[in-house]
Image 1 (cartoon, helix red, strand yellow):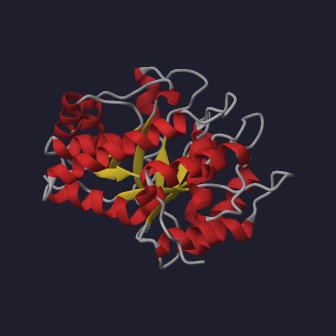
Image 2 (image 1 turned 90 degrees about the vertical axis):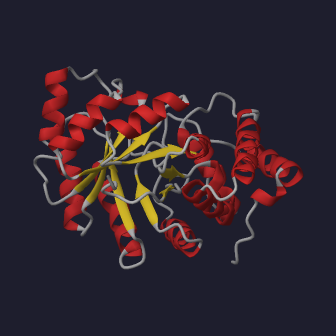
Length: 312
């Protein structure tokens, strides 16, 4: 069975904030243009790294409008993440996206209280069921308090034909990955850099949720293609070791307690755009210029081939 969404590379766009926490619009536009120029044409906004959990509704609308303008006719997939605490809040954001011509959305469970089985059914009926003309990716992340099991995705895929993909944000062993893909083969299963390579080596065709590999989009495309074709497993294992090394570098940075996903993704943004600000919406702490300097210096010394030369 072919998945409803063909496996692809899915990348996030992060939000650059001014010192007064307004959108740095010119930097944001340049980021999106740069991603598309590097062949990253399946983009989403407002996941965890995109601070979808923290933005106000006016910010959601204004930033989505810029995203819609920059991706119109240039991105293959453009998707808005919906992180909210109630169905009415979810509806507000979906309606904004639809008014901008965007019909692909990324859903995650409300994080204030763990959903019961009945509440879970209500959540999907009031999103996927309410908007049959839209497509949905479900973000299976522990921050939503409830993780869906592989067999639950099989049921979800059977019930709603507009559920097209799952984004796995948890570490999984090979058997768990196989179980997930086999339980819902109608869906495209997105795994992060390390998980994607492991799944590929296990014979699974899945999507690549781009994280550390965005430091060099050219190599990211190569490892994705190798994962799809299995043309050179030795080379694919080499990429796996590189990404693990990259992960260790990030974990060893002096971040002084900063722990949000955007902390790390904005370091990657700054590799491509030196002017990209690292701050996050308060109370969360972003990285620092000092940590970025250490990060870049270690990449240059230890993984120089993973720093992409980007025309300015």
